Image (cartoon, rainbow, N blue to C red; front, side, top):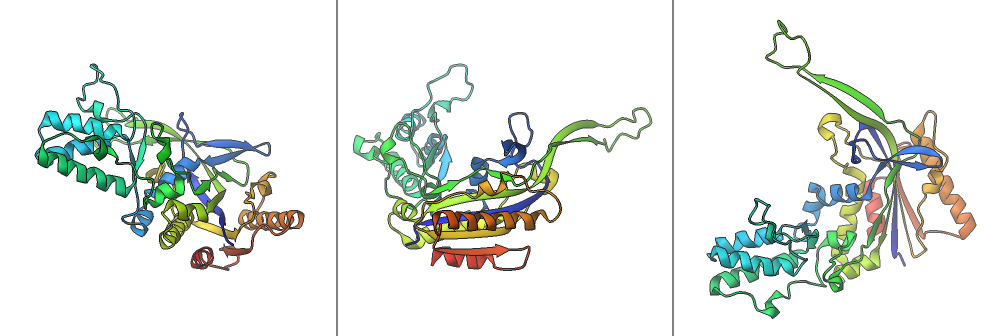
Length: 353
């Protein structure tokens, strides 16, 4: 049985600021007594699920997360010929199915703010189709929705992003989805120091005859690092979340694996061009209790050949775990750019067989 798929990745990023804190600095964490760079799981998941790769691989099976579905409903109702007053009232009713709508605020200059819900809600393709169909029906007949017509939420759906990353609807917990994928914050395998970049910009039309100073001065912070990333996917839960569709579950697993290995968060990309692909991927499959291998990096890696040393630390960690607990996986598949072995295709074939 191969219930669990565990992915361990090493990805090296050059100077970058991929994921910023509230002060605009690269996010960090202290581990093993040393400061590390960190990329939050939220940042990673958003980068993956909104990537062109993910969207194309799972076309028709990706949801949308928004507070503003009521505005989309309102727009569609107007396009279908509904009166403005009716469209607004019906939009509030429909949006309210997915979360508490915002109270009217007379200080708010946006008259449509009452159509927004307070919590981000993740809508599956099936739910969006049901909403569109209801909008068309209401506009055609000119009457508001009946109670039974507002049963728009779906327990069974084919939204791969919801199936992987879950959703929570505070007002309708029966329609929550438990995430099949657990994504750890990525951390550097070595200690880091966040550096400052003082920069200036020149005014192209300033001849320097009167003012020789810069047109703009600024400061940004950055750091470089080799990141360890851990992901655990419960394939049985993923399949259940997708209404038992094994083929779609494998598509979702494939898209997630490829995105994790090739898609970088977009923070400050125009300033640093810090796109990168994983240099090492190890996939484990089996029914055994999953475990991260972050313990391999409690002691920061240092010195030359950092990638080789990091790979060695992971493989030593695997061997030690297996010796202590028995085999922690039934099968393992690796791709290692340091020694030129394996491929991403072999990884994907191994975890979806």
